[in-house]
Image (spheres, rainbow, N blue to C red):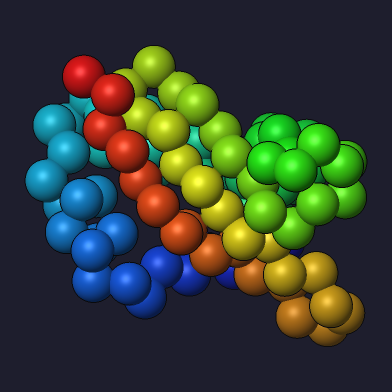
Length: 84
């Protein structure tokens, strides 16, 4: 399982400002992503094993950085965009 990281204050502020339905949708999606980030996201640069990935949901779009260097497995939230 991957660990979720988002140390950027801007990302934290955006997440905290999301309406309840968007925040819940994002939280559930991130739980799935931590299980298998490559299955639930798509590559930004078009290559399946790309570490820069994105996911568009109903209320948000997120950009992620996936670190998979055994034993370290991390998912970093790079950006959250509120779509509503």
